[in-house]
Length: 427
Ligand code: 4AD
Ligand code: MG
Image (tube, rainbow, N blue to C red):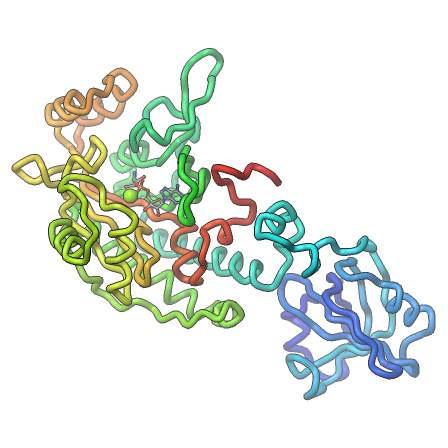
């Protein structure tokens, strides 16, 4: 059985080791042949020496090409000059799958779209691997957080009939002659599930037919959503604070090496997070020359301006109903919602939206009329309000938006292994 590089780094000088991985670099220094091997768990230097390595295996080392898959047997040596303080003296090397000439070279890369055309290969790079490891840690931490808080993990269908977040970003599909669409959010199904489980959470892809090309929109992204029976909006914001603090702490604790590779100095945001109202946010941006009508959603430019004012995430609370979906619970005047956006600092902008939902039957029926939404496709959702629906609240946080902030990345597509954007469906 072969050992992972991570395991090898903990082994003693003189140990016999078998490593499997891919060749990253190849160099000759005098009579010595050096390879750097990568296996997903780390990078490791191996060295071929005339006195130890058979000629046949030295020839293999000379023949091997970058990104070939190899199996190496050898002896572990402490060597202060080697990266990580250890290297492997090769006794045998087998070329398991020889790679053709690597197409991603400095001269070949003329644009970032080239790298995405070759995304099936470019994901092997050190930076993109680090981002994906941080993403994996984020998802694992999210799972742990909700399980520790007694939430039950559920899934909801991705093929649906009712639009949660409005018709403008719906991907319509033909479902055996019926109109259907891809799910924008699992929220409505979570609301049914809380009456069975009390607290639930979901992690699954969400789909938005975003029509504009931006650095923060994907057409398919991963959303983590949570919904809790008997929670009000204050509890909901507290839950988001706890969640973000928990996952960030985990990443800093377990993925500091990857953050360093990305050159990101990231500190865990301390609780509580600041809160400003929509009106205060609007006042600030207007004073700084970014105007928008009261009742509109906060435009990207204004959101970016506000986001740059803070050095940790903050909530924008009290959104007008006119900027929100039908299901939002409102204050008694029926114009201000009990909802908030969670905004990441440093210009990254919105990472989560959450709020309290309407739990009263008649109120919801009225609201659907106000929004001119057909009640038939929402009948089951309305129906829930007849059978013991308490006040409840929840939120959805975008994984890619969060990773973009945590890793300090220009474009959201970098956070997705095979991103889907308005202009990209290949590979
Ligand atoms: O703000 P959104 O649209 O809220 C909802 O869908 C609610 N139903 C969630 C809930 O309360 N259960 O989406 C939630 C989050 C956003 O804050 C953002 O992080 C992410 O999902 N998101 C996107 N991420 C990447 N690309 C897109 N096109 C996104 N649209 C939303
Ligand atoms: Mg939102």
